[in-house]
Image (cartoon, rainbow, N blue to C red; front, side):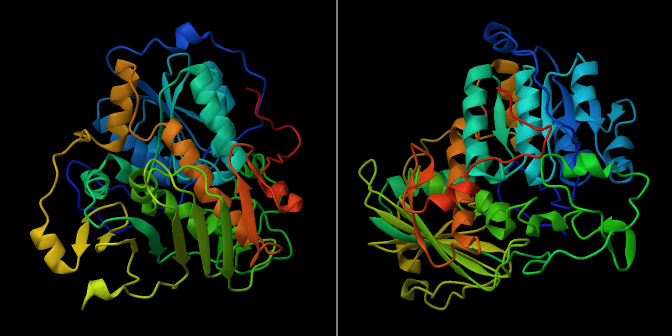
Length: 459
């Protein structure tokens, strides 16, 4: 499946097809001195990818187009990974990302484009070895993992980027400047929605077990998640109910519609409204179980006043749900073709698309009469991957570095706490600094990391 094209300048779209990345048990790696890590590579950056097919293939192509050397590729399924292997035949091929990182001493930067449950262990392994990392969104599956990667990036002084490519676009920068200019007045309410999920959810785990395809290392694909038997699709023995791509709907491997899309859709909200930790989260949904996310859900976040801005409520909708249409939109319809955001201000409404693209003020007269402020935010003149590579070479910061992407991912993924079967309907009070639910201790079990035996995050 492919997303709709973005309509901003200088950013080529890449497909969001299913993908599977390299996986293996985490080891205690040698810590590289900080002064060594601070040295940016010179000339072309030597890049490796953990996840050679699907999204990883797209990220790798974008890095090559930006001038990187693609020196190694890793995928647990060499049939799926052939999308990248065939395009870069000179790159060394691996199934086990540990071996790739240990053997290929020339690697300077690593793309992590695996299922969500593997982002943290793969990114941490690369950072511990002093490698710069580009990690697909959502940065992590759990709140505590996002905090761990944020702290590790600071410790190892590596260049980081989350793959929410809209953050390198002009639309999100326009939105920030307009809102900070007071274009729609005080904002106390935001509504955001997506057409996801477009994969199975609201289902139980299937019974039985089927033969594992010869090209796939199933134990490595499972990685730090609880072991599950390989169960093939009824009409395709080479694909399972979990992969490729369908992993997004399972609690053990993905984050449902919220984790999949909110790191795109809510990006202009998080940035423009200067958000950090919510004070509470609450959700309602269609029936949900302990195996998969519900078919549809609504999540409500509350944030306190900050930096001269009033308290604000953020409302998220998926699975066909949408908010009521504000009167300011007039004849404009609220559609479900993709994703949208509505900032509700005291003077009007600002609407934008999935990546902060095509921002527009309502009523229409407000947009017509609005004098746009000076552009105070630097515009990005490369692809999102190119922005990361440029920072790798100069020792600067990429636009969606983990100091931004980490807290943002914490906010997104904690919404899934409220969707858990035992928490639906409850208002969970959140202590962001301590990273815990303050009024329901049991809910904190889904904040912390619980990895399969043999896996850990040795910082």
